[in-house]
Image (tube, rainbow, N blue to C red):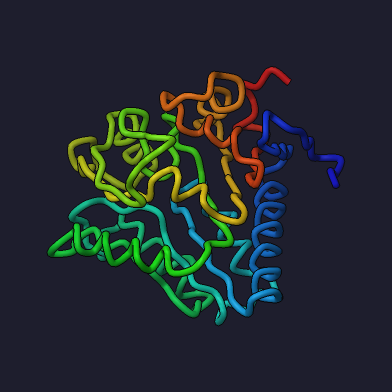
Amino acid sequence: MSTPSEQSYQVDQLRVRRFSALADMATAAAEDAAQVLREAIAQRGSARAIIATGNSQDLFLEKLTQLPGIEWAKVALFHMDEYLGMPMTHPASFRKYLKERVFAKVNPAEAHFLEGDALEPLKAIQAYTKALAAAPIDLCCLGIGENGHIAFNDPPVAEFVDPEAIKIVKLDEGCRRQQVGEGHFPNFDAVPMYAITLTIPTLCNVGRMVAVVPETRKAQAVKDSLEGPITTSCPGSFLRTQPHATLYLDADSASLLKA
C-alpha cells in the first residue's frame, strides 16, 4: 500500500514507487528486498541475490543490512560489476565496497566476487558464470547510472538479448565521468577504460528486481527510462519490460517526470 509520502503506479510492466524523502525510499526498498530473501529461505531453505554498488545504494544497503529476520547464513551474495585490472585494495573497487558495507556486516553463507585483477580474467569470468548459474537467483538489487546504464552495460555496449552472461566492456565517457563525480577517482584519466559486467539478460533472469535510483544527478536518466523509448540508448528503459521489477525513486530523481 502507498503511504501519504508515496506515489505508486505502473509504467508499461514496471512498478514505480516515488517517495518524497530519501530515507522513506531506502526503507521501503530495503523492506521489499528483505521480504524476497525471507520468502526464498522459508520456501527453499536458502536465498541467492545480486547486489549493486555505488553512492546511490549507500542508504538502501545500510538499511537492508540492519533489518531483522533475514537469515544471512542461508544467503549467497553476488555482485554485478568490477573494473578490469583493479585490485580489491583500491578505494574504488566494488569488491571492497561490498565487502565492507555488506558482506562483513551480515556474514552471508557465500560471498562471490568478480575478480577484476584475476591473472586470467576469462577463466575467472567462466568460474563466476558457473557459480551464478548453479541455482536460480531470487533477487537483483540494482541502480541506473547517469547515462542510463544498468551495471556496466553502457549505451554503446548494452544488449537486451545478449549471448553472454558476463562480459568485458569498454566504459563510455559519461560513465567514467560519473565515477569521478562520485569521488572515486581524482580525475577522468584515472578511471579504468574497461570493466567486467553481468549482462542485461543475466540481471533480469531473477525472481525479483529492486531498482534503487535516488538523487538529482539521476533525474534525466530516470526521465529517459520512464518516458522515452525502450532502447539501448538508455538501458534503464528495459526495466519497463520486466513485470517482476520495481523502481524506487525519491523526489530528486523524479523531479523531471511529467506526472
